[in-house]
Length: 354
Image (tube, rainbow, N blue to C red; front, side):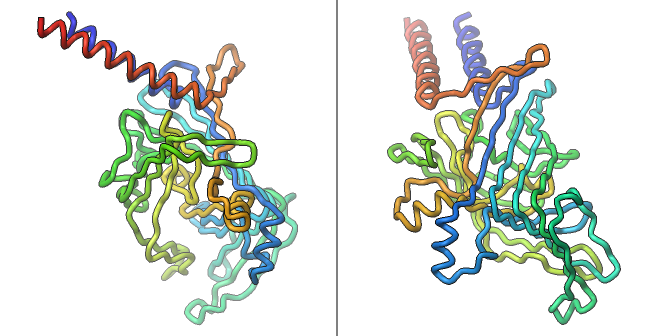
């Protein structure tokens, strides 16, 4: 009987931890994570003073697969990505993604006579032009360049609760980049992603001392950083022999998590959650954070794609109520669980010895 009580307690603790992390253990639960990379004019002025061209300075640079056509997307104003998670009641979490981009240049290169399918609203087009490819091997290919006020990209996928795998149309892409579950922690040597790029975790570090900041937000330690081993990839436009859009010889994926509850705090790159909705390559630059690091020499600031809002709640009668967990409260919550579990375990051991 004592053994059964201990097992039941362990299960209860596991359920509480998972539900607090992804709000998926009860019907109607809901979690929203909003990340951003912001434009900051002083940083742009600094980069220009160092010899860079304004066209080189972006908050995000992405390769997007839309209807089988690869697009290069450059964002010059803010980049915002929202992940809305809800319970599917069948061992999966449903994730809806909304990517909001402002002041955008969209480019693609296609064989002559092939027209690019649009994923943007025509009312948002500021200008459109074409120019011939300068690559001698692709003389008959044409570059299409569109300047847009705004672009919104949406998509959805599933996260399998048993192993935190991102799944879309029955295919597993890899471990979700949104959180590092305390029940299934990412460790050195473990597989991180499978498709379309295969990676393995190469390094894991935990910082128990230094907080990271962004404007009026502080991300408290412990902060866990996961870095994959290097991998290579080649993204080509899938027509004929294929035009090489992006060739990377050695890339790594880097994620920094709040180790107290596992949620992603910031990252310079994409990952399985974005690959599943067609963003095959991404690099993010929060210009406010970069200004503090590069100009003010304050490396306590978070850079890349930065967490700006984390909300949890339960849907009731068509309404949603949220509460934003405090970091100190999270420490107390998990600390209490550990103390409770340890106390019960020691009690059971003493009973057995008697």
